Length: 217
Image (cartoon, rainbow, N blue to C red; front, side):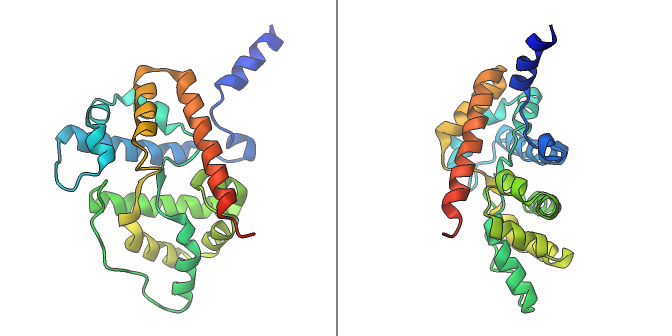
């Protein structure tokens, strides 16, 4: 009986992070908060400067149930991006004593206060992961190893400055790929776990390919 159950247990496992000695709970929390905020924004019907991902999938976002948010939040990588590839730039500007605060543009997906709060916590989580499990951080955030190493070298004050200066960059990963997100939201809402796992696995493979392509030769 034990041998018969083992394959199913492996099949149901969505995370590779525990095998790397990494707790996936902080990642799931950040994913869930971002998903919930987008669903709430769609339900409120905000019409100003709304990106295509929210316009074209308005109904899918607005009707996204809590259970679907939990399913999606369990993705084994960050569903949202804050530009971790810029980590070497954050470190460089702080080392020179240069203010890394470009003219801000409005975040099209999140309210400013929420964007800053999430960005700050995502940076701290990324920093911790970069220092303890750098290769896992590469896949979680779709970043190169040099960028992850630069993030690990950042001071807490540099992270704070980066959170203030980059909050407008927070957005869903592959935000222009509406068909991909339509499938994600539909599978999560319908409880189609097998299809959702396939989509998330495809996301991992895509992140791995993008990360490899971005590494310097």
